[in-house]
Length: 92
Image (cartoon, rainbow, N blue to C red; front, side, top):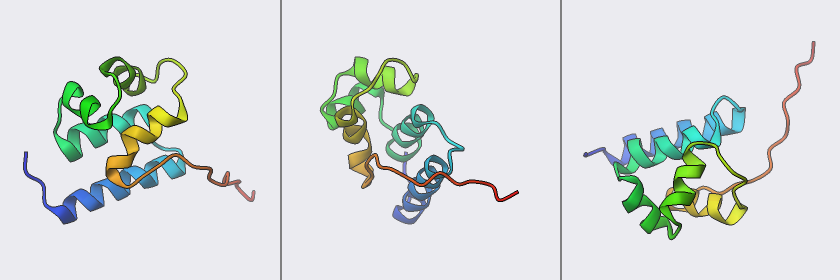
């Protein structure tokens, strides 16, 4: 899979925005980053992130209670990390 650096940056940015807006679940974001941005299989990606395949599978399926360390490990290769965002409230 070949994707240009610009297209990769736009894809990461759109995933980041989806997470910030709450329109994208962490599990789906991680899967999209792995598949769409890197094109790696779970085994390869887990090794790159220095986590177990089982942990990655749990993250991608939204299962278990993942640690901040594990979540940051999968986001780090994309220049991202978990954080706190302000809740947007409708002014109606």
